[in-house]
Image 1 (cartoon, rainbow, N blue to C red):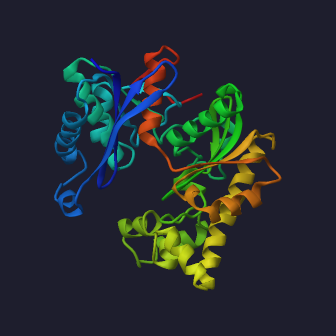
Image 2 (cartoon, one colour; image 1 turned 90 degrees about the vertical axis):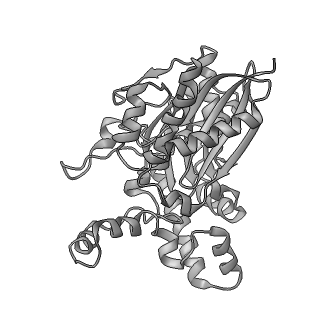
Image 3 (cartoon, one colour; image 1 turned 90 degrees about the horizontal axis):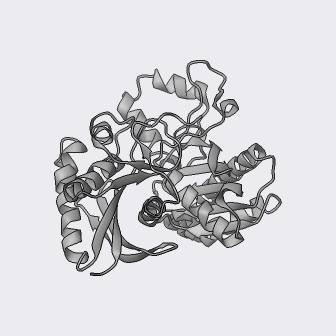
Length: 364
């Protein structure tokens, strides 16, 4: 018999990423990983995201048949979906969580299938299954929740999985307990999250659906009065306007592309407007990093840059220059969600962390 392995499942809009990780004494080691691409026309044929469940489950089963071999599956992990507010950490998947993710999520997104997929694979085998640090992690302090309008208190929606994994990576590098780390983490992907982390908690963040800097495809925080006027102008239907703000906003609305590599090529070709948009985006990121540093009284171990845009030398150089007076910049390109999922589950299997049970109350 081979190694004990954890299956991690990360469903995206047109992909289902699957990975197997062997459980070692101190970490998890990659065994196999594959991003299963789904044709857009096939996915468009499903009436709803829950209707995709059996199709994606068959894809995961095929991955296991090809890669599990002589290894022994001991647990499954799924990407946490758009849930109600929860503390950071690992949550055991049960029937109630599967039902909520499928039929009552806060927002519709393919990641809502993470728990049903992991649970659907694990349960017939009598194995445990978990989600780890979903985007609905909400550990804002009381003072951070107060807004200037009583009907719209601030709330958290954040790339918690990659942010916390990156912070753990830095803590290990500094040989410092994770719960003693003080850092501002900037996750820059299709959407942005800028978060303040202290005592192991994400005590404030820019909320990628609220006041975040604009990103390759999201409008970020906008002036409220012009936006209200636009809502009542009759120019857009509700769903059309939401799509323009969240998916067709940001760099895409200004330059017609979400690919920042193309934007950098435009700049290299002398496009001054593309350069202005690029600089404005990183200017806003720098402001958000400064705001989160203020939350931590400007006492930081580091600023962490992660996410897909961290692969860009221009992005890293710009943020290093903007944040050099705050703290050293650590760059961890990409966002390996499957690895972070497996690491979270491994901590539970080793007894280093206790999994929470659904439903989970909002963090205090």
